[in-house]
Length: 453
Image (cartoon, rainbow, N blue to C red; front, side, top):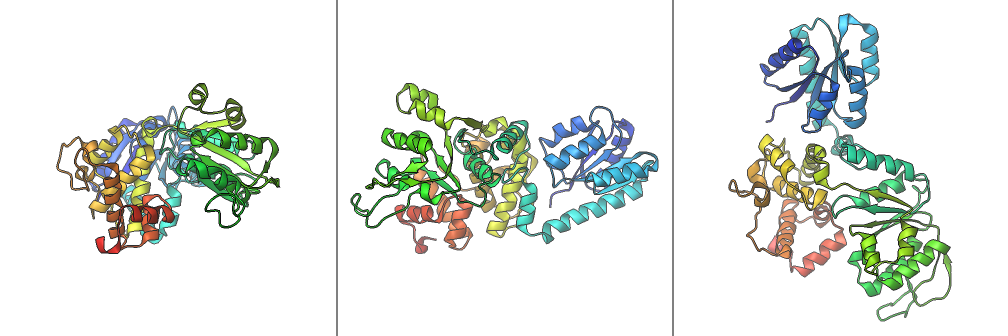
């Protein structure tokens, strides 16, 4: 079982080193920082179970630090060291979120008792609290995990735009979490009681996009066996998220522009206008301005959609968040797979932090799923795929030969996940991050049946 990690913050070198030595003798993993500013930098690279901080320090003092981490790392527990038994300082610290305090001069036995009790409470809470509560604590904003500066800027923009009804264009590489941004905007807006409808336009055949968005009448085309509402009608009084907007062909772009200008749609095969009250949120992983130059995207539509834009950073530019994402996904998969993976080794963590992550959060999620499936204790470097470890060690995780097709990789992951959840397709779809309908389609495409599991 992994050691509890403790961070000591004090500008008195002798006291800080003494506390580190004292706690290391009790088999804790301990690091030190001279002030709150240095501590915040350390917290970007490693997860701690407990922080012990002095009240009065230069640069960022204990109280400022406490308020900062309560905002950025709400699940992190803090013990405050106050000078000369100041009741006022102790009360202020507890009100600001400290779980306990100790007065100077620090009595080793008293400190050890407080630390032991705090760590025990923390460990018991991990077991006693429901998984959903624990996972919620690990989120820094809405459904996002990450407190890095680039993500703080994203959260700021979401807060600014959510109360308005303006169109929003979300930009970023695949796998960065664009739909999470769209959902946060909807949930924090006055439309939160309305329906949020998400459409991946890139996954719909081009000749059916108009029908999906605007609906159709019976007989409008071959296969239209009944009247059907489109996504705009489904999202009436709510929000419509259009992902991969760059994949729309020109006729649909023209229709979308008309809806933005008039708030009126017409079902395919009908001339009857239908008023819709929908907030449009779009996303693209392509450079739309470059597509405009190539005459593949309408410039007037671009300016209609790009009233406000939010650009999501790739994971390689927010690596401070990786330890927190790892913890979140580890605990999520523990819940979903009924496992108890305790931790990740420092070597494995370092490997994950050094990787470039071309697939961003989605790729990290899949790597951790594969690792959790491969172990029953802690995630080690050998549980990571060869492309991350550069074949330094023999990999025990599901690995693939060079040249293996993406479809074969996907098929293997689906089978392994279904095995782990004893064939529960709904649960497998949730873990794989796809819809149940998508999973059934893939099962059919890959000819996977229960006999193969």
